[in-house]
Image 1 (cartoon, rainbow, N blue to C red):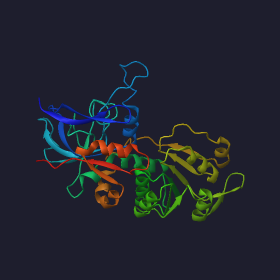
Image 2: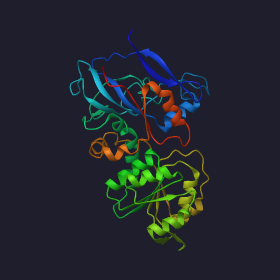
Image 3: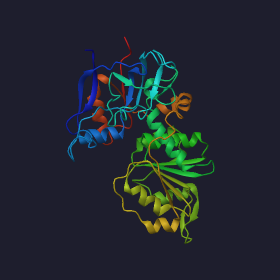
Image 4: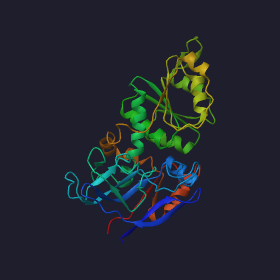
Length: 349
C-alpha cells in the first residue's frame, strides 16, 4: 500500500498528521499533487471543535474527526482513461463542492491538506479550472475564498457611483475590496481594528480606511461619503452599501446607526448571535442581504486572479511549508497572529 501524509482534526485546538492510503484514480478521476492549500476560518472552527458535529451516524452531540483543507491548488499527476480534457502536468484549482464524495475538507471523504487529492468525475468548469504557470500556486490557492468574496460583491449589485464600506479586513473583506475596485466602484472604505490590516487594505486599493476601535464610524463615513438622511429626515452617512465581512455584532450596530434611507447591508461574515435594532432598520428601510458561498463564482474569478495575481498575493501574510503544518494551524487559530496562512508543498521530485 502506498501512503501519503494527510491533516485531520485532532484533540480540540490541535491537528493530527496521519499516514493514509494514497488514492488511486478511477477511469473518470484525476489525482492532484497538492502544491498549496489555504487555511480558512471554517478550518479553524473545526480545529477548535476537534472535528465536525454533522456526522449522520454518530450520536447526537458527538464530534467526528475529519480531513481538513478546502482551498487547494495543485498539479495533476494522473488522469483516468476516460478523462479527455485534463492531463498530467495541468495546474489546477478545485471546486470543493464539485465532487460526489462530499465537500472537500468540510465533512467530505477527502481533505485537500494532504499530499495528494483525488477528484472524482473530474471535469473542467465543474470540478477544476486550469491556470497558467505565470501564477504561483500559493496565490492560486486563494481561488476559493476569492469566490466567496466575489459572490458577496455580486449580491451587493454595487455600481460605479455607489459609496461602499467593508467591515473586516481579513481575506474575504480584502477580496471584496479588490472585486469592488475591479468592478469600477469609485469609493470603497475599509474598517477594521488592526492597523496592519488597514495598511493592507490601502495597498490592495481601498480609497480610505477607518480604525473602528479609535474612530467614530458614523462621523468618519459622513466625512468620506457626505451626509444623507433616514426616512425621518435625521442625518445619516451617505454610504450606499455596507458589507459585513467581520461577523461581529458591532457591525450591525454601526450600520444601523449610520445607514441612510435605502442603504443595503450585505452579510458575508458568519454571525453567531446579534441583537438587531429592527426599528432602526425600519427607519432607514435598510435591506439585509445574506451571502453564502459561491453558487456560480468558483471559476468565474479564476481568469481575473490570473490577471491580477500580484495584487491578490498581498492578502497572504504567512507561507508555511507542509512539514510545519502544525505551526501553520497554530498561527491560524491564534487571534491576531496572522491574516491569511497558506501551506505550501515541496516541488515534485
